[in-house]
Amino acid sequence: MKMSKEQEKEIQYEEKKTWRRRVMDYLAITLASAIYAVAVSLFLDPNSLAPGGVTGISIILNRITGVETGTWMFAINIPILVLGMWKFGLKFILSTLYCTWVTSCFTNLLVPLGAVTEDPLLATLAGGTLMAVSLGLIFKAGATSGGTDILIKLFRLRVPHLKTGVLFLITDTVIVSISAFVFKNIDTALYAGLVVLVNSLLLDVVLYGRDGAKMLFIISDNPQNIVKRLLEDLDIGATYISGRGAYSGKEKQIVLCVVKKHLFPKAEEVVRQEEPGAFMIVTSATEIYGEGYKSIFSQKL
Image (tube, rainbow, N blue to C red; front, top):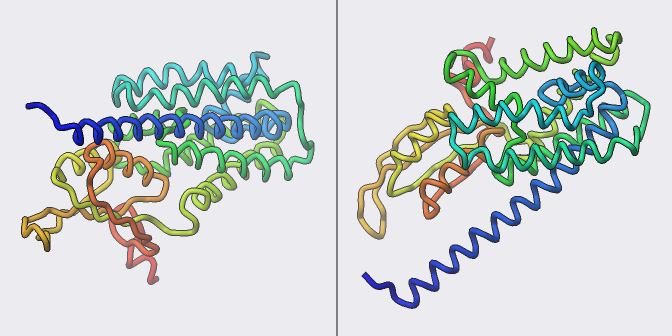
């Protein structure tokens, strides 16, 4: 069936919008990667602060081997990204691979500039803040920084009863503890733990202000595909609500779900990939009780 000129123009317009959005996303990722590199090379690494994750491991290995921190960051991420590509697909990994490569390059390039400050508290606050800003930009661009979040996601497929937050806490605690032995300084390890805390708290503020979580109402012609992705890819529960279109009179299944703040960009990306024309309402949810959140009984004790 031959398309009309109006349909062809609409398709061309949508393609241009898609490419424009991709270019803007990659520019944002590049800027964010540079900011992350500044945090590592000018604040954390010179002060021997290893704040968990691949970055912390890379800083520790730099001291042991002498190989540049940025090089270690990229080298460690390669097998992790291969695993992620095998499980989650090439499209999921491409932006993360680009982010990892640019961050590693900037990290090595900035090393000759040396430390901006040798005060460990100032380095902790500045480094943690810059990391939060950079990660917020990366998540908003639909990418990830790779590293342990992919490993933890893979691990949870095997052991789903363990909470993501608990796994991150365990891995960061282990890496920070190792740094105390490598650097032979417990104060440095404690400051590194403070970097993790500052980054975690500020990342939420950068992404979503002070809201507790996001509640999504998704009206779609193919809600089953969206729900399947939310359940399998992000481990987010969802509920179908029956509805009827006021204008069309058609029966609709509305998807209701509550998303923790750090997962919202990925949930938004799932909806955009499965049905770009879906109608989605996003609102704030400050008090959430039930499985995966707070217990209403324990909060009242």
